[in-house]
Picture 1 (cartoon, helix red, strand yellow):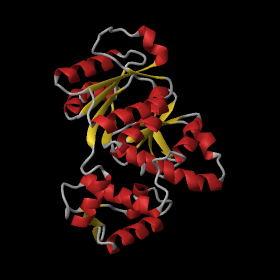
Picture 2: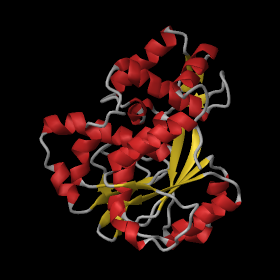
Picture 3: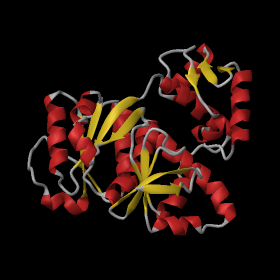
Picture 4: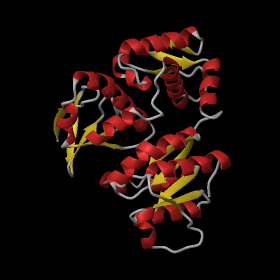
Length: 302
């Protein structure tokens, strides 16, 4: 355990070495959590030109922040950088970035007028995917002038109008929790985080990834998280016993489960059962489209 500078927010933070990865704990990118970076990618990413860094790093920081706020534990490598920058879900215009701030306040509030503290602003401009604090301040002032928020120092409140706009952008209400069951496979999880999760969010779901670190095994929060979910997606690729167990528990509690599996693993399915009829996928973007179609048309899954 030591200290190292996060490439994306420039804060020096505690890091832990873990099987070829560096775990960055509680930097501005993940204030309440952590993310993992492939150790050998640090120097590669740090060698980017200034123009690439100035454009890409704020986006990656914001992406990590947004995913961390949803309870995900992100894993990155150098090859992910350009893909994150070009994701369709990344806000580009000021209006899209304004909506990100409204949605953040909406998720943190129980209703209009509830005070949410954002302090200091210099450590939080990644909430809006902004490249600097000046743009965040501009966004705040635009929202205030439009009577969507009230600002009192570092305290922010959604007005009735702001609450309604944020709710409308979330399909008329708060997002529904969705628990994702994936095997312990970093490449698989990275595919899903980049391709599948954004499509699910567009359908009004907030995906939370099943974790199996030693700490989480000891604390045993998994079953509690399942009970809070409106939908379970269980991927049988690599045939993790934990995935079968957690999905079976969800079914016993009458929580809908959607099964998926990568085509290369189909012939090795451990449990042959008529109720398990998974979506078979080759590429994560194809699976994302299938799930989006199912969730958009039915609202729920089974």
